[in-house]
Image (cartoon, rainbow, N blue to C red):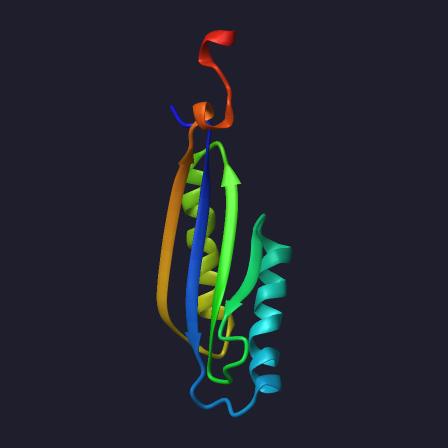
Length: 110
């Protein structure tokens, strides 16, 4: 049985009509900040920071409930897709179980 689950969502957003970094940040940063405020997530701008027309946003969460992790990441993906004036071109979700044995806990200790 897993001790918990770590979920990671990565989303690439494209904005081919944007011509400079300042304009792109003005589109992406507010969505990232509202996402952090609305959901129990860690959110970061991961890649494409020097590109003016695309960016990769990363989202992570952890819980002892697989279903909760899955649902929370789905809500985050939906929020990103609907809130920004950009196009989501790729999305990947990975949920990894945390094994208590890897953390040095011994099930025979109780």
